[in-house]
Image (cartoon, rainbow, N blue to C red; front, side, top):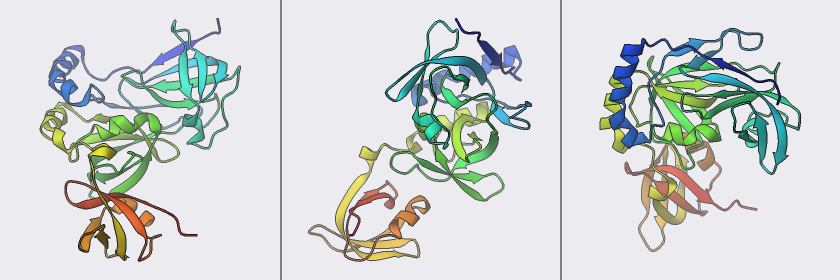
Length: 279
């Protein structure tokens, strides 16, 4: 069995206080499936992570790749059961794929979900961003717009392993987002018990799945201008829609006369679009 090691990040929450907070999460678990819980921010200091931050409860597992099968790498970490790492985690970062015999450092969060995967010596720098989701996630939950406490907004891609967790955060609920060295969201947690309680009341504002959006099929009559487009639905009258900021770049490619399928949210704003590229 390969030598293994586990680095546990210490919690900053006193035991009694932590127990009170965990009790307060019971109701939230029904809302989010225990995907997010409150946590403090911890600063890392190491050869390749100096000044890097993490969320409370994160730990690093050291293991060895034993087998590559399809889109997964089987890793022995000495936990009794092997870990299976999706190969696209490193592909999303532009890092070389894992191979048999590689020693790997696996960062997991407080729910034992994978946050990051690196080879020893690779740069791994994480930072935290405090704010709220400014709008529901677009179709596929691949990007998020965060409204910072200072007022400005930041747009970030979300790694595949964190999308369902970020989507469980209601719009307007204060949270701490963990951003990796590629400027992608890799984890998220509520900031404190107050925001947990608030999230219970904001639950209906969670980002919907693609199937929950209204679909509008038709012909684009007016390309994107001043955040608006005009579409004539099949058999209907021309209608104007406001376009969410995250997909405006996508809509700039379209010209009048193109057939489109719009995905419209409950605020009657376009959150995604499907179309056929012109030759």
